[in-house]
Image (cartoon, rainbow, N blue to C red):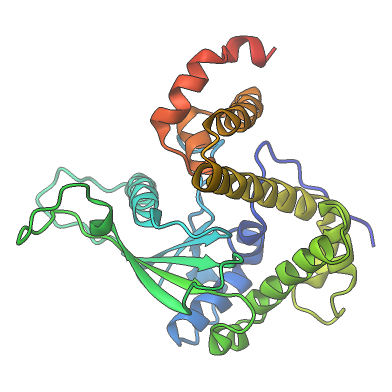
Length: 303
């Protein structure tokens, strides 16, 4: 089969490729229906709003779309992240700003604006076996000095759904693309861990071993290079972040952590990424990246 290669300045996650792009609206619609118990079938009803960092203020999310007056913001995580309410709050703010501008609305008038209702979801497919089928993450849990009896002025709730094998069977049965994506990730991990294949070979074998009648097979096979790149980017970073966390927790070797962090930041600076984008991708505080960013002289690195 002739391989289709898409030339993009940034690299999407595999979840974004499958559920966050306009060409795969049907799968996004199927995922929405599975999550909400609905039966929508008109692809024209979906307005894809996934942000691309090269186009929108240095920020990108995994998948978002508006349907039935809901703004659905879907994120995929291979590591447990209790800070997702903060990230989803930031994504939502950008998406509402984009929505208001795109629809030529004014926030300064006397009329209440009819904006879509946010539905914030994280699909977890990491290896932590203690993650429940479903749970909610709250922005309030992130506040550093919350007074008893005092209500915060901003509330955010994010639903986290475990899509690993053995979890949320009903959801996966209702959405074949999501079930096949989950299975593909399992196969890739097996090929790496048990067969000791490099990531690119692990992805190739996983795609080759998929049943040809799988909903997502033809797309993955036709976009094989991009699929492999998305997995390399995501899981190399996930593995590195896990290494950093374990090292800091178990051995406290801060010097080794800083060196690894420096190497990753240096590579991302060379790709022209902003401080905020680097911090978001690596799940590290912006202030921690800022010092390294200034120290590493980006003007010299990008030459």
